[in-house]
Image (cartoon, rainbow, N blue to C red; front, side, top):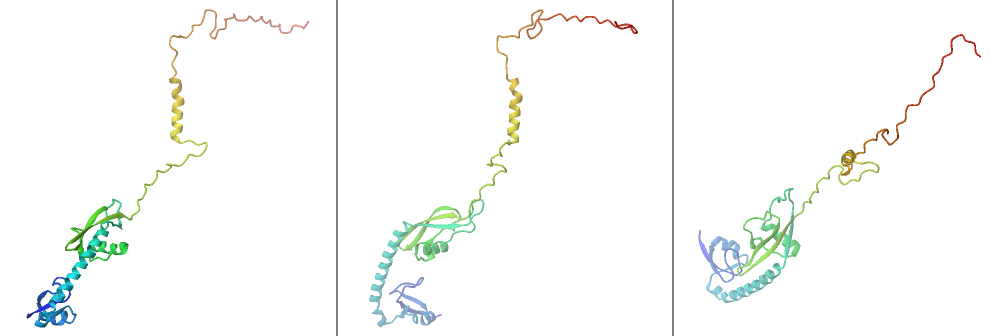
Length: 232
């Protein structure tokens, strides 16, 4: 495929910047670069434009450096919060990628950024705070604080039946009744006789309780009347 040389008039990713002389496919230059105003053919007349192109390039790069330096200072003060769904064990569903961070920066902070400038060694899959590196410019890097929280509500444990509910008036729980019965039964056993005192023996002639014994009372004999006797 034949090649041709052109002078770039605009910065093209992967190809070059203003004033760069590059070799490209002839069809690519003829059908895209030159018609779009991104390049001009390399001729003696066009070479005289190189100085103005270099000056414009220097101004553009200085402006980009200043803009990205200011953006880096602003990002250093930011805290980007992203809510994700998690399971009962606290593990995330899915992950956070460079595209997710770029979208949230635009939505929350009104910062437009190419996701290629977000450098992640691997997608984020854990909750908590993370430090994300942003490569804003060949000479400017920034650190973004990212807070990942769970949006899944925490379920409270179900209460035990009857727990926390007051008992009805006049009613006691079975455990309370059992404890009361145990105290009532154990009370007599817990009483001990006072030391140094023995039970008093009954004195002769006295009945227990302190009353003196009395002889049995004699009853008069009853005489039966003979049958058939006349009454006086």
